[in-house]
Image 1 (tube, rainbow, N blue to C red):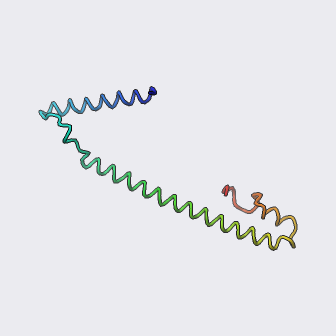
Image 2 (cartoon, rainbow, N blue to C red; image 1 turned 30 degrees about the horizontal axis):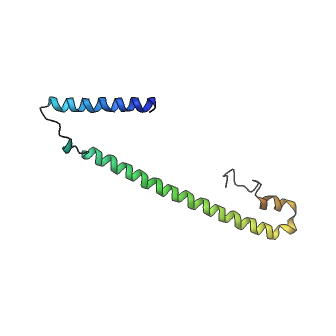
Image 3 (cartoon, rainbow, N blue to C red; image 1 turned 90 degrees about the vertical axis):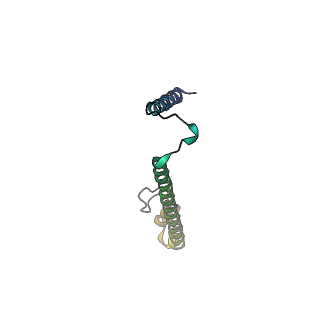
Length: 108
């Protein structure tokens, strides 16, 4: 077990004991069967779920955009290959994808 996880476990135990002690001061006894997350837990779960859904939509958007870019580049490369025999070496460099196709470093 690493030092960080040991410290985290000790801090968690300390907080749990402090919460039990505060509850005992109010005259209530601690019943482990009645522990619920309450409205804060519901809100935290809802926010987490919304964040995961939003990240999913953003991921799909980026994947779709990259797919379209790839298809367009293939179409352009095919068109340049067809007309490349008349143009000479300049078209061959762009058809090869040497980075001079105006992509501004997108990496795809």
